[in-house]
Image (cartoon, rainbow, N blue to C red; front, side):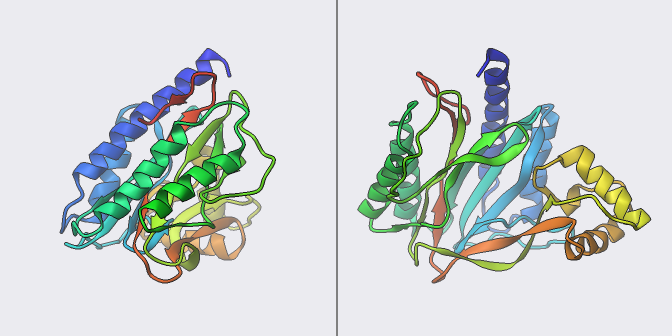
Length: 294
């Protein structure tokens, strides 16, 4: 990994940290989801970067893949456990970070479980480390708090314009021969839950990814052209599309999903409806590792 690449990862991480903190500062009862994402994504763009994916706001039993739609009127409740997951890209190099806030003050230990699991995992990162060891540390930490790690969610490698690449970074003990390679960038993201320790697919969410750009309709071609140019292979939200009138955006996106041009991410929820917390940082695997989002 050359110095220019390292610097771009660092810059993406710096902006992601700032954006995450701005989002966390807004988390209080009555605040609209749209205000949170517009503030966070607005800061990213003001800093000269771009979101690597739509800001995820996961509440209570939701673990991932929820972002508000164009017309969303949801607001935070008094007893919500809220996770903010933020991604930033600088020339395609990504900083991916997340944190959880407990508005109820009843699940502080759950929040601490994912935070401590993340820190303990970061403490052992080095080139050549078996990734199963990361899962072991995460599982031991979360179970030590009396909760379950979510076994079918994991951390991941990140590469230029690719949010999930290379190694899967497990959250449980895993028998594998995979090791971390010098020069990799990885996102470590422990999830702790009071529920099943496994997520299921919920309803179709508002986050999409380009699958192919073969389409006939004029409007559909226009939208796909914007998606391809602006977002490439990275996830995006319909509310980001500006090339056509807003009332037509969601209709056109729905058509493209049905036609197989776009992949729609399902909202992921704990199978037993348990509360979920998440913590995440991006780290460059070097002899002296760099946590870019801390």
